[in-house]
Image 1 (tube, rainbow, N blue to C red):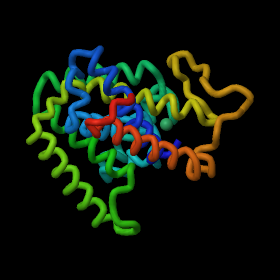
Image 2: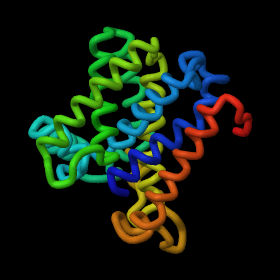
Image 3: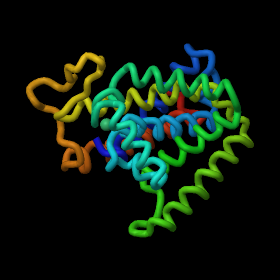
Length: 235
Ligand SMILES: [Zn+2]
C-alpha cells in the first residue's frame, strides 16, 4: 500500500479502537478525551508508516531528507530487503515496547518520538503545497509544532505512545497483507500471508487510489464525528 493509505488506516484503527483501549488498557484510560484522541490518531497514522523504513523510495524514507534516506538504507540491509522483518508481528511488538521504554526513560525522548510521528502523519496525509517541497516542509514543521504545543496545553499525557506505535505498525502489516505480495507476518518464518485466490490488490493502482483511500477518509470523518460529538452515543 502507499504511504498515504497506510497513514489513513493508522488513524482509522486508532479512532475505532480508542473506546475499547480506554476501557481495557490502563495507559490508554484517557484515549477518548478529544485532545488525546486526536493526538493518538495522528501518532498512530505516523507509526503506520514505520514498516516501510525498509524501502528507500517510500514516503517515510523521503520525509526527513538524507536522515531518513540513510536510515532506510540501513534498515533495508538489516531487515533483509523490502517487506521482510519490518512487516511482521515481531517488529510491531518490538517497535511498541521500544517506544514505551524510551518514553518512560525520558520526556525529551518521548517528545521527539511524538514530533516525528505527527510530522510523518502530516507528510503522508499530503499536508502541503503541491510541487513546492520547501514550502511544504516548512508548513509541516509549523503545523507539527503547533499541534504538539496545543496537545501539551490540553495536558495530553502520551502514556499510550508505545501502544499507538505498535497498533499503527500492525495496521500497516495488515494493510500490506491485503495486497498481492502479502507480508511475512510470522517472520523469521518466511511464509507470506496474503489473501487467497490472488484477490489482493496492486499497490498504487485504481482500487487503492479510487476506492480504498477515499473509503478510509470517509471512515475517519465518520469516526471523528461519532467520537467528538458528545450527543452521539453510537459506537
Ligand atoms: Zn509496507
